Image 1 (cartoon, rainbow, N blue to C red):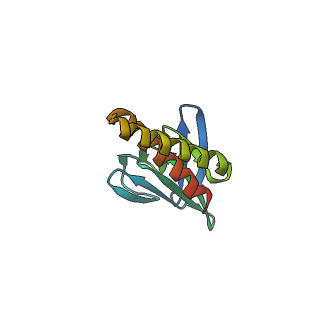
Image 2: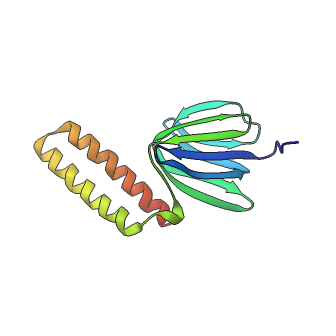
Length: 138
């Protein structure tokens, strides 16, 4: 008989599966705010923000940098389909800092040229880099 006091969390990207584990609780950031999910939660589908996803299990907490996408939860299975995602232990801090600097430069140049599309893309890149830096530093 399946254990109905835990949930299964799976995070996939276009490059494949990034994370899979059973958990006591999952915390994600949606476009509407943070959402905590425990076993037997009502089914939900939500759009994810560029932010940290936390998976609590066995007295530990895994942190994953999730860069957009959506979550679907039903029958104690949470599936996150993300544009990109990276486990805390896999984040290269120097690379993330470099990405942040590049994004800041691109954002400044786009604003000087009043190029709104380029500025929006640079802002997204900056949010993703900062997200990775924040998670790596926790």
